Length: 321
Image (cartoon, helix red, strand yellow):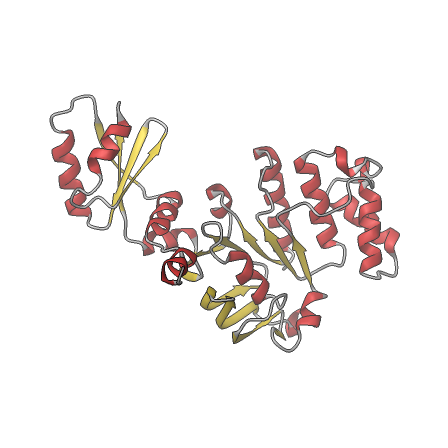
């Protein structure tokens, strides 16, 4: 398929639902991901992120809904989609008693690639693995294992990458290098769907979606997601912030308090009520300093979590003993 014939959206799905037993894991999910876009999935553990990603790409059949991935129907043409997708699981899934090259060669055999050696050499070169090609995988650090996993995903030149918390347990420098690679791939027109719990990574995505216990609560750019919640945020600097946080809970205008080191972020939707509460509170406490603050993605993330209900917990309550 040439560039002119490729669809504008790598993923275009509507009304996806999925149950596992009596549990409604994903509820009426609709989403679009453009070509060359890095799309981040945020949400608490068990919220349906992985299930959503797999359904959108034809790896898991939804109970209802429809859509396309890379121009192919997710219900009827899943085999075509699978050939064009690279999937990197959260858990490292390659063989530790093989070298890097042997692992990549094995994956190339699975894809029945006609010129395996050339494909493996290119993968090694593109991700800076050539000098370590003969090193046993079991001796690699988390960052180098991550590079190997990405190289294996890219062997068959996929048009879409699915990355399930790919940097969990990896040091900050390796995470930064990994994201540089993702942006280089996106610049080549490859779409990336990535789930993450790291706010600095979320801010590096072109678009975000926040899913909580099966329901999509927010989507858009980082700034759109932040502004969409309408939170006002103030920063309080000083001592005894833990006690202050407890004192603030339930006060007019206060929806949440979050400690960031020696600063307490206090957020709420009623900006005027929040400001009055905070000014009255610190008026007689000279050791405290109040300043208006920009609402950050982490403030919004925590707020959305607090507004969500665990669908499994609800199911447990409703189910007979």
